[in-house]
Image 1 (cartoon, rainbow, N blue to C red):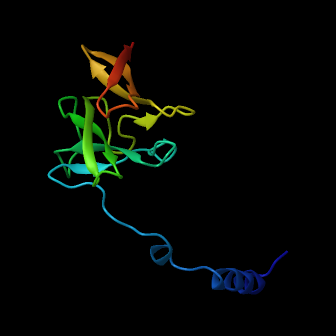
Image 2 (image 1 turned 45 degrees about the vertical axis):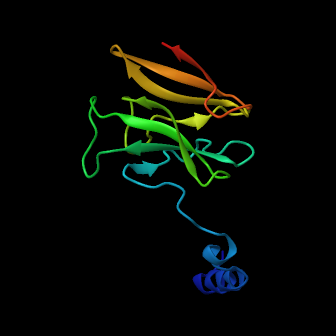
Length: 143
């Protein structure tokens, strides 16, 4: 069994070769107000496969729990076009913790999915991103 002293000595040696992430990777904000922007859950795909577009959500409320009347805007940031916010839609089925499960569909270069509530039913929206021009979309709703 490894002693605490040997474990800490080994950890110190391992850490000696690391460096601060801030100096290794540029960090910058890609959204601006007036909404409060964030991306939801840890296991969802925020960036498209080419890393140009970053999905996000924007809320107008802060410091309270949301309710069924609070709308969350869905959009994405074009990181190659001056971090332009592109509106995609909205949802009324979200939480601060998991948002609306917004993500790029796994394995897809063009499809985005998120949850919503319409006419008292929970639905999922799938949008297909048009390669020729941002804003060409096909939308499906599934119950």
